[in-house]
Image (tube, rainbow, N blue to C red):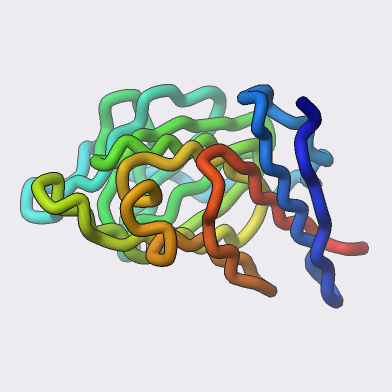
Length: 176
């Protein structure tokens, strides 16, 4: 089965959507490298007073988590919270799993904000909003999208994608 892809573009940004029905990861166009990253604060898990919504499972190369003004290196086992900004370097990649079983895999030179995530494991109710600012992310949805597909959204600089599939890739890139 072949992946279904289409592109939505506007001045400055192109959005490539790829749904992969067979489970095979589709190839995405390379993203130009970003400037060097600023220095990191010491690595730390999500602070105890901020609810953890997910956990890093794999990290390759450079990946960071930013909350407010603090920035720390992403590490397997480290937590993420709502409002965290996640980023990867030019050779970086990271995979994290959210509380509902959603798996997010960031590609190289990517930046995304976890704007909203609420999930009640008893009622299976909640919402999700991911803001992909640059780069690419593969999303394999969990229980939240299964029970509340209208409340599972991915936003880019030029569009909002309502999710109806269970495995897809979103990529933003400069249209130069």
